[in-house]
Image 1 (cartoon, rainbow, N blue to C red):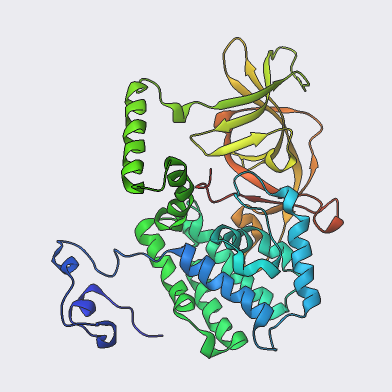
Image 2 (image 1 turned 90 degrees about the vertical axis):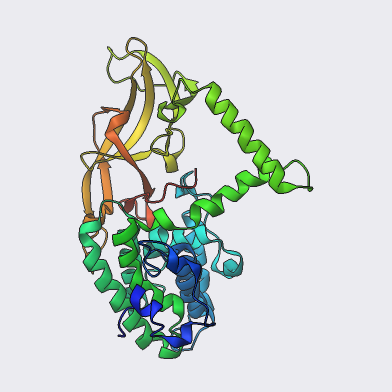
Length: 383
């Protein structure tokens, strides 16, 4: 493996092939600016649109040694369709068939890479291809998680292994800049934190907001500037209250359960924690699971606003049995991924501060009622 480029090697033009002209960039004149370190790689384009799409296309149209038969492609598509109802509101798109891969967006590729891939690809890919994918899957979970930095060196080892095994499985001639770029993602984590801190996902997702600001085809930039000025005026007029800190309650009902006779208040079906970007819906099975500070997986059954104190209380039951989803190359519980079963008999009460993450649960996957796979939702920029 070649040595890493540095700011000094760039200034000295050590790698002449990467300098198009003899003119130096004005960025070199900036004080204390490292020309190499200050430009992080965007994992939306590099890993999702680049590597993940490349893997899928290799499985569908690649060399015969790795190409899947049409029956396996249809099985993966069927697996994807079977989990549509498990996808929460935090995902802007539901899974689509592999046959539509040319129209898949980056969020769909991320969904397969970080969340659904280990389920829908198992028993469809060869063992070596599945292991190669799982190595990428686990390393990316670590790199987008704010609380898994202790596994950063492990993630670097996984990415090194992924690139080497990719070369063996798919061929050296298919090693692209995107594949090589994976080796540098851990360094970006060290400099900038979780990869979503420096990814293009928030900008791509904000494009729909821009579109809603336009009222005609002429002068789009001027229209957007005006809309932002109007937003600033509204914010300044309401500066006394911080709306982002106020939970939103929707859809009042009277169906219970009210496990504590002392607990009286208005009941709701939806709770939106705007400061945490978490939405809980008790009437939608894909949106009623959350994780607590004690690392419990809870199913919400009711949301109550106490009439006396104004406190919001969530009535729920915890999964009492948690087992490993996978054991290699790391035990899944280290990543807060479990097979969960058996809800508690008694209801428990939680305040909003107890909720630290939304949980994605694939219920009875593969037709097995004991196969409920729970994993935390790591991205929070699509709401």
